[in-house]
Length: 286
Image 1: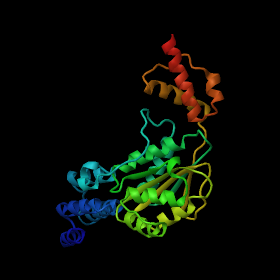
Image 2: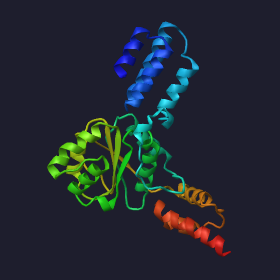
Image 3: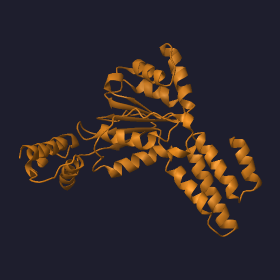
Image 4: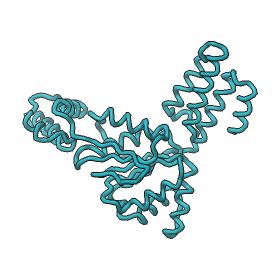
């Protein structure tokens, strides 16, 4: 379909009725970056040669493609997002979330490691990123928690089972990357310790640009292709806003906040959550 839509567009390069089907064909094939580039090229061509902006249908389609509108995706993709679900919103991490999504969405980074001390909110951030991106990926999200991170062979076997591939370790090293290369997929390793999983990550990276990988851990893996997003504790003012936002998200009212308890939490979201729960408990007891 893509060669045909590209040929039809080349025949009439200024017709929106030719570029829109071509953009949708690219998106259906998982080539979202190419679809956005096709839209940008068309807009620049029309502005340069005709001197006017493309019409509303083109603008709407481009906006939906850039937002990875699930309604534009083929039903056969059946994207699964195997990520932890949270009942409260991501708080005080908008910048890190936006950065991570941008790096992975446009394929500029294939291996993104979110690092920081225990309790700083690595898993919560990565789960939010996976949820944002997952529905727009043909292969969805494959999530490996600590239970699946026993070693490179067991991790590879888990991923293989997720994409319908089985075999001995040698076969999996060849078959799993080939399966992942066929559909845009995000694989998450949550809770990486040391460098034990580096062989597995290295094997997966041979899948090519269709695969993106995220890891969480105290430190980065140290691979050449890796990009690190370091999470730091939340500042004092942000910590108070975090507790207030969490209490309100859980249906409570942030009254009588204990500033000393907030300070003792050291800006770590895990400890700040306990402060918020304490506020809710006090309200219930009252």
